[in-house]
Image (cartoon, rainbow, N blue to C red):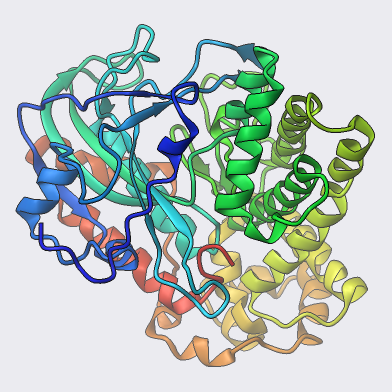
Length: 480
């Protein structure tokens, strides 16, 4: 392919060696029909100049990118799945395909190292009884999830490519046979908590040290001079996961499958299966139909992330003092409260005043949600009150609800805050009566015309609407 000057391959993961991944090849698919390409994400790594034919060659047939990983690598890891340890995991339907540098910034002139990883690219040594495939509907759901999460300021992988592959799949949780696809995601690293757990399970402190050094050198260069790298790494991961969890909560997002193999070392969420966005505030709301005990419900996500961090600390205890690791873990609660306050203020579009006033406003917002109950949908609340504009909120479709006495305290507190970049309200997005949402019935409505008539117009219109929302909200960028 003609290489763009901004394409900077930097394949670091293969340097870890054979104990960390297995070389694999993608399945040869009957068809390769391009359904989605993320040119904005591609531009960030110098791949936006690819023609559609070149795109399909690399992300449908997986011809290697110049100077990059060849062959692809299926990572090895273990993990707790619904808190039961599973030593038979690993990349069962995906692999790490390439690594390259993101465009540099003032804070990081070198640019972050990003991965291109696959989902649905075929069987690997870790597929167990699975077929290594992804349903087209599952791929569409992930494209939508990542777009919406990015728009709402959540650190997330980005769906890079979706190609339909022409196979018929049998699945127990959707009408079958169903169509197949291969997804490529752009992510800030695919090294998981379970990657560390695997080497702790086999009692290999040497490999834990090797993996720790790799993560620090690749993703946390500011820790290179740390006296105790495993402890310093855990502290940094605790801070990033406190931010991630807080932003999930502010976005009203329920991941659904928060296993330790679904959390990575960079504090960026990825791999979206039975996720949901809240229709209204409900701490007991679950995303996965099989989560009968509500282990991964909306309100339990902070507890779950902390439990997962404890498992990472347990793996690192083979190479670090337990007391120091416990001290690092103890920073989560304080960091999470601060990050939740910041995330909620960002969603309300107001400037911070000081910890007590800020926390009081956030508590007031949750009391307002409780007052509204099922009458008050999650996303419209932030849309209506963005930048603290009471006139706009009270004159909108939910104005009668907000005018009630139960919202008086919230109205009073919010009036004392200064709008943050109020010019954002001039965006045409905020003149609409309703915001973009991504509720489960909306996803089903987008899928129906694709399934019956191969009509993708509603899907692409939804993505365009979410992109408009992203620009209008102007929330923190990836990695911020």
